[in-house]
Image 1 (cartoon, rainbow, N blue to C red):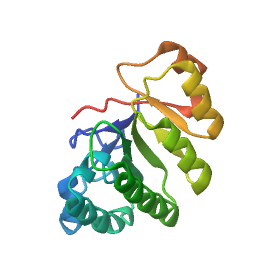
Image 2 (cartoon, rainbow, N blue to C red):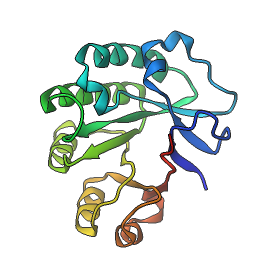
Image 3 (cartoon, one colour):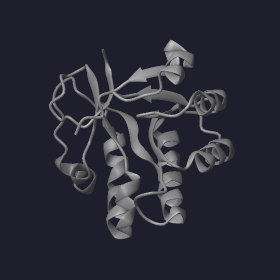
Image 4 (tube, rainbow, N blue to C red):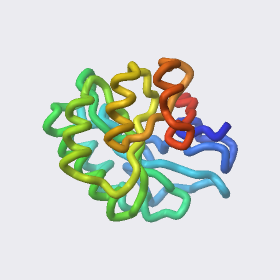
Length: 179
């Protein structure tokens, strides 16, 4: 099984997309990828609790996204339970989507209780790159709504079996999301 989203920095090369930690975004010049490994880089919505640090991470992101082994932007998104003010989360999110478009990279999304905002942003931004919600646990009605909007779903250890079944295989991903 290909691991669509993991935080294990030592995941086997070519078998996973490794989400880079914030430290790497703060110092992208120190990024030392392993041969054959695939990576994702993005400012997590939890990082928006510290606006200055979130801006530093955002500033380092283009350097990482230009690296050929960074194949995805993420995880980024919106979290109404944790992180900074929603208006700031949206500002950082929109800036990252602009980078994803510029670098032509798909996006991995962390979304908590912000489905309405996600769908509104997807509709207004009209991305040309693929968006995928990681760790999806929602009910089938929400899964259908996201799929109908063109957003793919990734499933971890805990998920709604009905939502998993109704997701077309080519739009369904598996992940460990292990830290």
